[in-house]
Image (cartoon, rainbow, N blue to C red):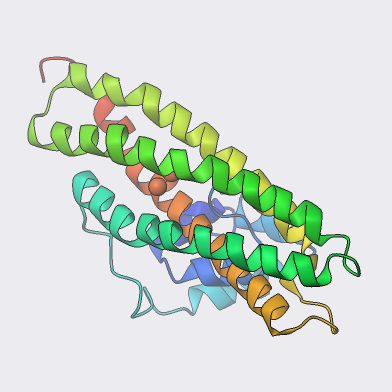
Length: 233
Ligand SMILES: [Fe+2]
Ligand SMILES: [Fe+2]
């Protein structure tokens, strides 16, 4: 790997890089086509220091399943059983926690109301997005894996385009949330619930970045490569 390689390829090569990029606020999912060098320069980070740090990482952390050998169909099962399950549990729980913190703190912290609005917009985008993947795109990918046909492969191109667009939208909302929430550093007068909310929102961002990375940079390219196979192959 070279410093001029795109950020997403480092995570593709070793998913342990995701947590370092997350910590440094380097986008590796929707904006992952930027080279490591350019991403570091943009954030005012020393490229060689970041490069050495990520190259020293051991491969996948133990709690992150090794997904490198999975077929596209198996990858959809992995994504659904980890990231989709997480979001379905976390989003309603965070709505309640956000409401509680807003009620207690919004008079002194005017940033909370806009944060709540952006979070609710994100939830309103993500929930139907998960269903579209689970009901339309993922079953199609599993079906195509069993019954390969160049013609049918083209059927995934439209849904993938829509999903990529929705990922970009979610990525923008996550960025807005991070800005409104002061990089998820809770204020000194914030109670435990306030701190928990910011911790949980940070986790939501981290999980969603990894989730989108797996779809945008692993799953979809695997299908798009197949799509190029001529009809009748
Ligand atoms: Fe997904
Ligand atoms: Fe998605």
